[in-house]
Image (cartoon, rainbow, N blue to C red; front, side, top):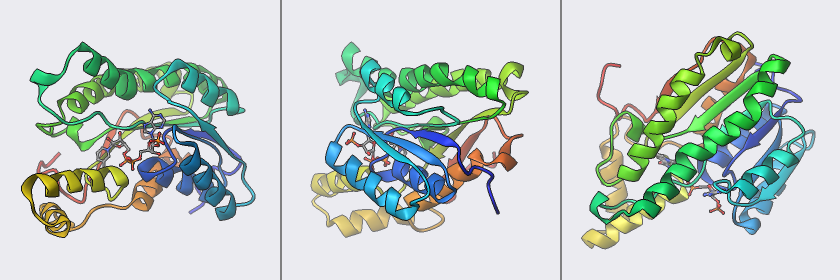
Length: 262
Ligand code: NAP
């Protein structure tokens, strides 16, 4: 199916690796020009080069910087001629016990996983509405639906974003102008972040990494982790012209791990 996105511009945040990169790859495959961001220049430039090889017909711009800072956001926005598609993403907060988190830890989580996406939405959404097309995807987490005990910072900050977006997406000034805002909630995806978590689990328990990974995958009905390509494909579908009537939704991508009917 042609998703109708050829020639559009997307700002894909935190996209040198993992889920963000998966989204950039899927959009580039659809003929979308992209601005990708990440803090580490080397991996970012390598990803940009791979995207240019993947589809030489599109423009790929790489902007190094921390998207959770005002300067990082300004540079990313300035590089993008117009933001038709915004994929909000950033690293997730660290795990731990809430008794150990001070105000600074909470502010960092809120900055990266709530206030940054809101700031980028604020900077782009009215122009999308004026042009009559806009797609905003926030990469959040399955933890928004089923909290993960050690990830309290993530549970809290991402729930704040989710609540805000639920109201914003339903504003007629946006929904009637073909601007949709949806959240993608990853379960377990095989990225560097997941590998890090599995390695930490193996070190803590003294078990082999393979055994820890196999046990985690066995708890998922699909019996495996998701791939960044699968995640990116759903992101591109949500951005498509065909998805214009789908807004304000939280879409769980977890291989069936969430046990509820709804
Ligand atoms: P990943 O493989 O570690 O990739 C993270 C990407 O984001 C890298 O390109 C990283 O590059 C970039 N990044 C991180 N912080 C950034 C910042 N402040 N500014 C700009 N770029 C930044 O992680 P992932 O698995 O794709 O996860 C993406 C998001 O989904 C995270 O918020 C994560 O918590 C969430 N999530 C993931 C899973 C999963 O199973 N993978 C499950 C639930 C939720 P630099 O480090 O060079 O900046």
